[in-house]
Amino acid sequence: MKKIILSLAFLALTSNVAYCDEGEPELQNASTETLMEFLEYCKDNAVEDDISAAEMKKYLLVCINEELEESYYNTITALPMG
Image (cartoon, rainbow, N blue to C red; front, side):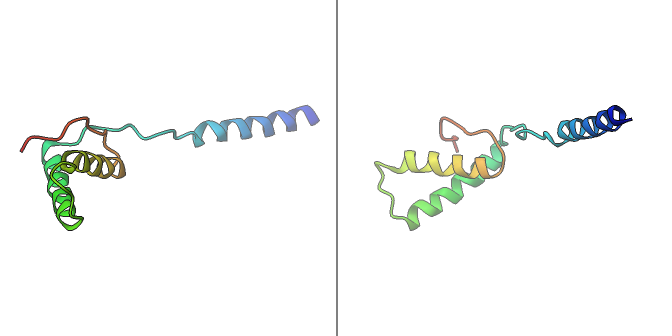
């Protein structure tokens, strides 16, 4: 009887762990429209933050990637053209 109860308890615990493992969400690529919206948003922030022309590309890329990560999109390696 003890073996049956222990087996059922073990089964219940292990099956619960299997359903709780959600893992990381699968990231998708952002649409061109989304990238352009983030680019405009980051350009506005750059003006407010007085970013120099020499630092602008790096600032925009970091800013866009932060927005992409917060929205569960894949990050980019180059600025979108637009």
